[in-house]
Image 1 (cartoon, rainbow, N blue to C red):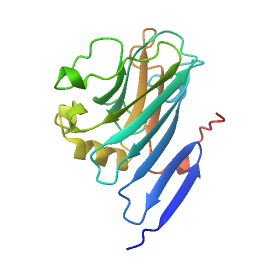
Image 2 (cartoon, rainbow, N blue to C red):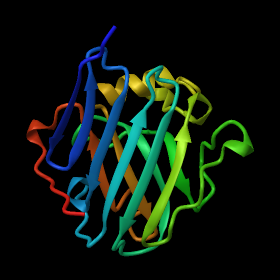
Image 3 (cartoon, helix red, strand yellow):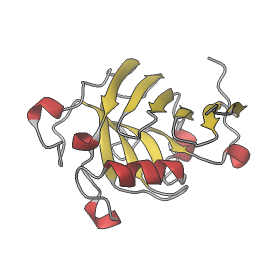
Image 4 (cartoon, rainbow, N blue to C red):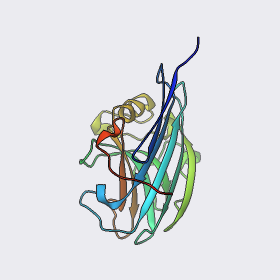
Length: 183
């Protein structure tokens, strides 16, 4: 069976869509403009990810620069546009996480302080919740569902902006996004 593949590039986001939509590539540009409340910062980042075909792993890369203070941690949160939500997975961490992944070996890599790149692979054992939003620890299927429906965002937290300095929605529908990346 031959799969139809379409490559869509809209407003700094690349999404690979197949006829069965199992595999997905994501590219998001993070700024302070999507933070709640708004953060006026020179910080900027790019989050890229690939969800594998069987939806059991997400390979990711997070690159940022220009942060106003040192990064403390970065996550994927469950939350619709314009709303703060709970942490689902850690991308990197410089401070002890409140709800760490189950096993010490699963701890995320350290975050670059003000600029740099971090990468990794996320799987079910990396999902920490948020339980109060219907995602149990280890529930990778719910995380993938939230990503596919546009109900997640990437956030980099810093010392100066503990609730987040740069952010962007992981969005399934890019028509309303006006951020552009010229990297």
